[in-house]
Length: 296
Image (cartoon, rainbow, N blue to C red; front, side, top):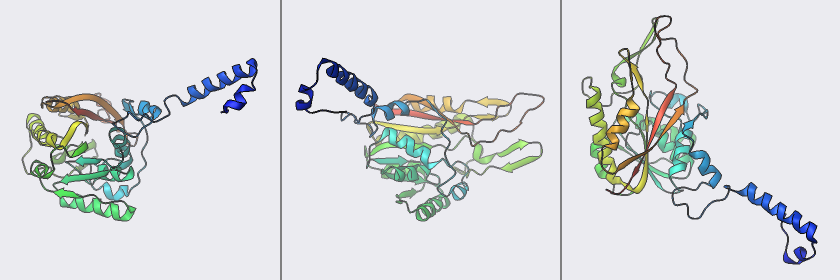
């Protein structure tokens, strides 16, 4: 409740005390729920900013935005998850880059929150899927450069990108069959990232490092980058790919690791892998590594 100066002058001490109490309550209720004009990172209010700093994302994202069509690509991400992340690290109208765009979940996410975007994807069929989804959903279609990210990143102007978000091709996952039980085996839905024979983990990490080295000049100073990466259980061993990749990118001068966000993907089904002989985890989470470009 608000009062003008004339009304305030009519209050006795008791009413004045009630007014003070009401103002304190209003201030408390509004605390953190207003937009701070000093905010140069995003368009979030204080309360929204606070919520966005949670290091575990357990929100369930619906299988929408032509999910069945996009699921032809085994590594597609929910566009609304990408939207949430983009809103944390950009303002409306800013430019987002995905150098490994796949079927464009990040580009769709950018369109959902009034950002601009550009993608790079080596496989034309995934670009075609992205374009079809945009048409069916009536979404703004952003340009996607078709080709090797190492080459196409050279076409992106220096310091023109406000935020990078991408999902890296997992080490050898595109070239291995998945076995979920003794009775079921199927080929991975992930497309070939390159034409090389099976890479060692070190070779894969080096290839990823080169891509992120070439992405760095495109990012504005103090801009952020989010990288999706899942861990892997292969060859009777748990591979901490998120930690391996974090170290590789952190070794590039200019990138500073700021956070590791865990995305709990509740849509993942649980499977009995080692029962009843050995413990083998059902991986229902992924990591989202957050980096910032800081002074070199």
